[in-house]
Image 1: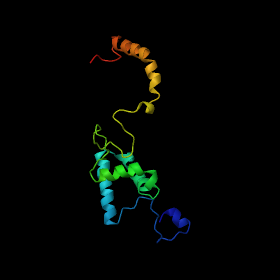
Image 2 (image 1 turned 60 degrees about the horizontal axis):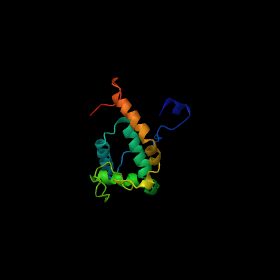
Image 3 (image 1 turned 30 degrees about the horizontal axis):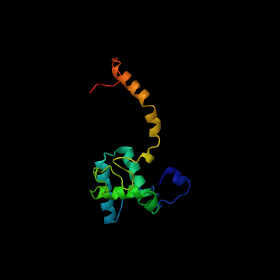
Image 4 (image 1 turned 135 degrees about the horizontal axis):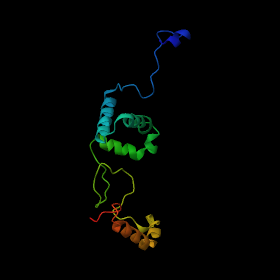
Length: 147
């Protein structure tokens, strides 16, 4: 009990309430899940404050009932990584890597209607090329290397 607790007349046998999510898992299955989570965090080199934030996010969002829909892709990705697997995306020209998140759109060649902003870039092709060549040939130590 703290000094302030004695001044407020609090009983000595009352236990302090722990912060949510700070209690260690007691169920063996839950311990295995959180050990697998730790391996994923190690795999992605998550340390310090970022690791604490990731643990809290997983407990509060992905493990929560609302996480079934709100965090569906993150939950599916995390379960795959915890089991040492990667997403089977079905794209023949796309590599299978841990960075691929289930359910995200990804195509080896994007349909033209998905990149309508590209027309503005194409319209300025000459201007962009001229600027690029000027930066590359400036010789002032800046710009682009000729590889």
